[in-house]
Amino acid sequence: MNANPKSDAERLSILNQAVLSYASRGYALSYKDEQAVTAVVKKKASINNTLHIILSLVTCGLWLTVWLIMALLNMNKEKVITINVGPDGRVTEYAN
Image (cartoon, rainbow, N blue to C red; front, top):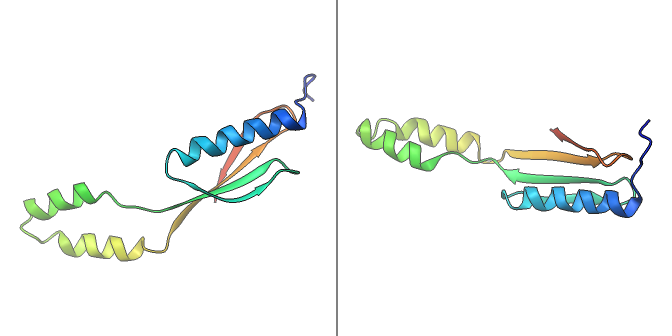
């Protein structure tokens, strides 16, 4: 065990900072449990449209089929991250 545990307020502050860090990268807060000092953030999966435009131009439009298939497959996918702050203030993140 860690000899220097963090207070609940410190742990909550660490959690809020972690959530803000993900929010700056386009994630949205989906769930937050202040008692357990846990949060879940989600972000819709995306594809690199710039790359696909360039590939479509280089292949005279042949790449459009691949781009369309990728867009349809990623349409309903989400990246989900669970963030937890332990008693010692250490942040653990789980990708679901």
